[in-house]
Image (cartoon, rainbow, N blue to C red):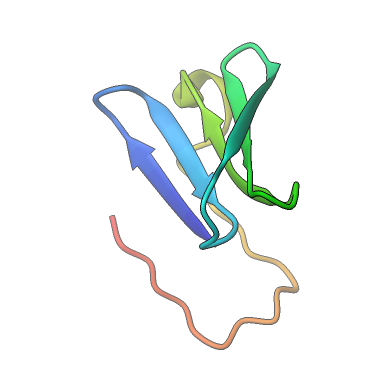
Length: 72
């Protein structure tokens, strides 16, 4: 999983898969979910992210992590 924040547009994209997105659906105001050709979730796009999610803190809990990479 990869989280990418774009300050110039205040958007956050959460990649949950490396598969290619073929369909996007708006699920609420400024939140778009992307799906692959089999209907599996690929990513989540959040517009105006700084007003919708706590961007200053990321907590990972009980994940089966083999490696971690954190960069600002």
